[in-house]
Image (cartoon, rainbow, N blue to C red; front, top):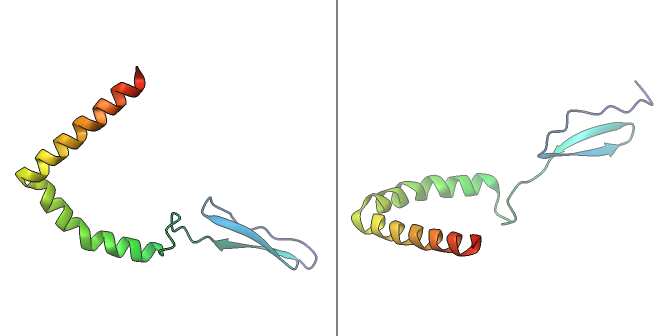
Length: 81
């Protein structure tokens, strides 16, 4: 194998780097441009989700969501004309 380049499977979220006679696959940090590591975003989401869900189950939350949805539909209809 000396002198032959090996190329490992390279899915979308990985980048292939060349090192000596071998191609190595290095996982990219997918932070969606926030600079916050994915595991921290997931931890934050797990902590906030129950509170957000409970809010939108209330009458006030449902009313605000309906108002937001109506605005979004109005924007969409305005853009399509």
